[in-house]
Image (cartoon, rainbow, N blue to C red; front, side):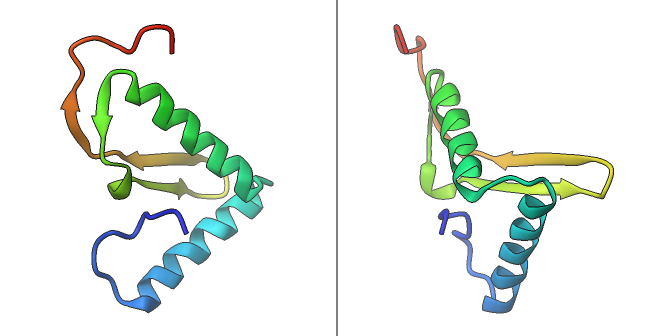
Length: 87
């Protein structure tokens, strides 16, 4: 779906993680396409300064009923010497 599960995991663990993500999005009233837009915006912003490995990206919601956090793991291939101009 998002390419988040690059490491080998048992299918039950992958399904459990995906269900957690869907339930968290539902609780936040966050549509799947909105999550994709957020992910794309983060990638664009960070890509101005570093080259990232998009296949290794992991975004997940953590927290409880009162507090939520979007946690991102973004593998960096290299640092750009200058940010991209006019992006």
